[in-house]
Image (tube, rainbow, N blue to C red; front, side):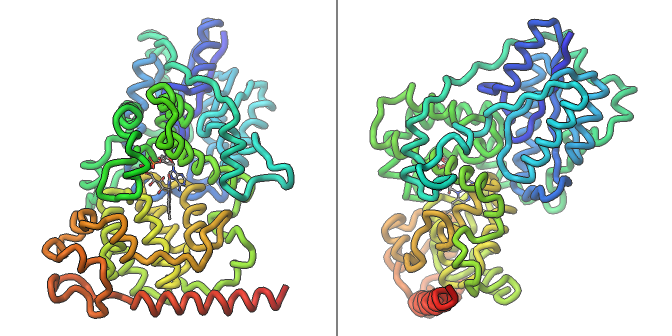
Length: 491
Ligand SMILES: Cc1cc2nc3c(=O)[nH]c(=O)nc-3n(C[C@H](O)[C@H](O)[C@H](O)COP(=O)(O)OP(=O)(O)OC[C@H]3O[C@@H](n4cnc5c(N)ncnc54)[C@H](O)[C@@H]3O)c2cc1C
């Protein structure tokens, strides 16, 4: 008889889950048993502790996943602590013969998983890792020169030419008896390091409970992920190109937090897309966004310090301001009180719902790094704490892209003008007025025009602009020129 332990981390689903599928199939063949464990490991070296919005999501996602596994006849054990302390103890207690898990790609997590595999081998436990989080492993495509792609277009051309298998169904249930047998006996439970419950992880805020807006907007979990995907590919993707940049429209998929937690696999999403639709410009654009997610992980796999080091080394000496050097500006940005309507709308949407429309993310990031000259790391950290889709690849990559220091980045001199962006993508100011109630009575055209003293004439409660957009833009360009000259003279 074999005993299989499946580890879950950012892959909280039962559909298209290679590790779970393999474990159930093998257990069936030998009359063996399947155990499942989720490990919350924020303690291993260099692992980045989760942000607060992501923790809220995780609580609900685990609740849903635990129920889905129960329906398959598998009990989900919850562990907290260093993977290398908790998993070996559980594996030994249950007499695991096999360990199965989806691969992870950030360096601290890879280091942990490699050490776990070594431990398993040393204890004659077979360890198997699988693709579960990405379409393809980050090392599958390689440019003719160099180790990895630095530009998105050739990367996506090479990656999208690769085939991927059709998604797997959920495994057949193992039954009630198996479920009862996979619950840890009390004698084991009381001795197991790190053993806890979903509530015991204390992922939810208590006082104050700031998650009302998150609850209204989202339903975490695999069932909701599959439904969101189906609705999008069947009824929305046909207007993706036309609507995706307009924040007041519901034209994008809203799949990012579901993908972040692996409640749905990118293979499943693309398979559903191509099953529901003939290829069009809209389907290609949407697929290429999934491609951007892959690109961020490709870059992160090959550049493990991307979350704290500029990809382009010439930017490492750029004189960004720290949060301590510009505390009032940073706080005004975080609270949506900059006096720039589109920026404030985005920051308030983020605070309220744990999400922000992609176009607006670019605008607020450009405003922070270029008009306020504040270090992109401050923005990245705020997003890390407040986004429900924050992850260790997409967040830093996109911040570096907007700031100008990332791979394939927007040139520094491309400074988004938040008023022109508002005029182009939120002409009637529906999005602005949705999130900034002080501006409800203002004329939309007025909101897309610079008023040095703000909108006090029509919205007395709304703050005056923190900085003059034209002057701060010019200042940023001047600093950039000087900084480039310094770098060139030293090289
Ligand atoms: C400064 C900044 C920070 C960001 N931080 C994150 C983050 O932490 N996590 C995250 O998932 N996305 C991040 N993004 C990318 C993007 O804004 C979101 O993925 C997108 O808004 C999610 O909405 P959606 O699911 O409706 O996207 P759709 O337009 O429906 O796209 C489908 C999927 O493609 C992926 N995707 C789309 N755009 C990007 C992109 N630029 N980079 C990487 N993947 C992408 C997402 O998984 C998304 O769910 C960031 C963008 C910026 C400018």
